[in-house]
Image (tube, rainbow, N blue to C red):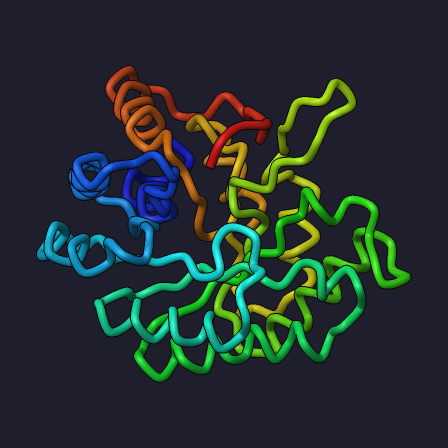
Length: 260
């Protein structure tokens, strides 16, 4: 295989964020994360302390989402939510930018919002992933075309102290022509663009649309170091199947639409 099991497993932030998930679901999800040796679980803020206990000794980190999924909380609310999550044991924070402020070109607000979370998290030794929600940015904003808008957000995030820039929340649903709601999540184009728009100090995380092993490998090939996923078991079981069969190469899949 192109990458080792550990190299791929340690890219995965196992997502436990769906609003219908019960505490029993969250515990079962943490057990999956520990079984497959992933990088972290990304969990609801109220469950951070319990997740730390469930995962103690597993080597799996606990991450919390802040201002999730739409980024509309006041900056002080985001900062305080970050403080509580870190005090409960979160080692990583996934925050959503204020998307409306960004689209309106209030860059000073956007940067201050990100910086407040980064400064608070870093005081506790935690790292921060800044979520752009690229599905909402396809038309650009503030007088910028879409790609330039994302480049601007990358620069602001790095300046504010971000450790990762992240494509999506997995819940950025856009109304389609038929009236239904869907989203793309991470795309190859956006991952390449974001990787090229930050320095080596800042990493890139994909979220949404990565649902199989080939998609995970593609994310790695494009320079991302983390990937939000719910299909952890399917991806890593497929790795073991190929490994046992003596396969030496991935099938070269694409990143497609789908859930976080």
